[in-house]
Length: 454
Image (tube, rainbow, N blue to C red; front, side, top):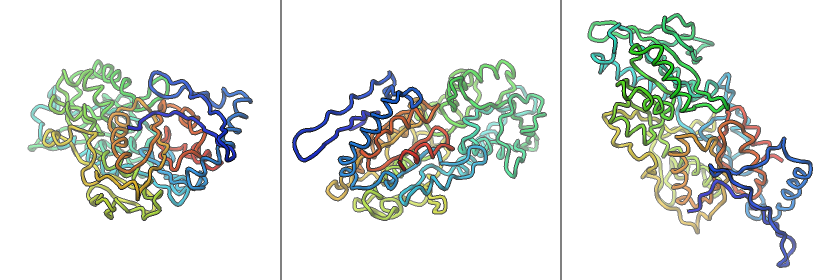
């Protein structure tokens, strides 16, 4: 299969003779498989001049390969991180409507967040006889927050607090700020909730929460979460009855570090294969965000734009191979130019149906005819090559679908910390027919559209 993190070889053809200019050498790769590139700050003036020359010189071949379409007019899909203000959550409609073939693909964050919160509440009600470990009448939980500026993380924190009654209002919505520690229940960012089961009332308290951000700046960090549960368990001991996490990477780190041995149910998000398997060992549950549907949509909307057909082809309307999605697995919001996969709770009752997170969705698994849908080249990046969900679930799904959809995809892995680690490797967008972008930060869409507009 044609998978690679990237080899950016620029071939320059000049004139109509057989003579050709040589291409640049491929940059060295580091141990993670991503290229070790210069940053813009470290480039010499000669480097920058040479970059400009090679970009200009390659225009003839690139335009031929992409049908004389300007980079700014080529199909673009944002995925996993919706362009938005990380402080307010307001969507960046300039990025979402960059051109007529620009869309976002993700999942319904609010629906999934409410589902996760309900899953935790249902578990408490069903297991109340054993859940209050020290019998103090307080159901104490700790919360691993992924990224305080990420809309999905914000929604999941709010979903937990709403379901458990611990949320307080801030600026018209539930406060999603981490509380630090809250052993006495006096934090102003949350409040004590209550739940009545079998005629008995219990207090529900968020004992602690923090953003899982490591010293290098990467968020959603599993190792940081593993360290945090060590600190929290030393402080709170058997006051911790539940662990909630904004994703499975952090949840599994806490589960393996402490909660598995102490029989404390942990709830995550993403339905990663290891988390689903761990449900048999006491992991409380997780949420499938239908990564199989998301990965398909990510590449499908590009395929449709490249084919010049209606964007709904192979989605709500069957394509010529019979691929189609039912409306119970996705939704489209035209005002937001966004496709959202719907979520499913994965618990002890159904986890065996979700053991293979990289299995493609059967209703959209039919191969397209290459004579009708010729191969096209796509640039796609993963914001963090070490992200558990994206690298272990999402990318393998993309790699299965790209064959079905006749797309030749270059996969670029970022460091999870800086946009420049990714954008520095989009030095020659002219050689691609379409782009799929997964930003490090939701505010930074202009870092990419600026390159495509040059």
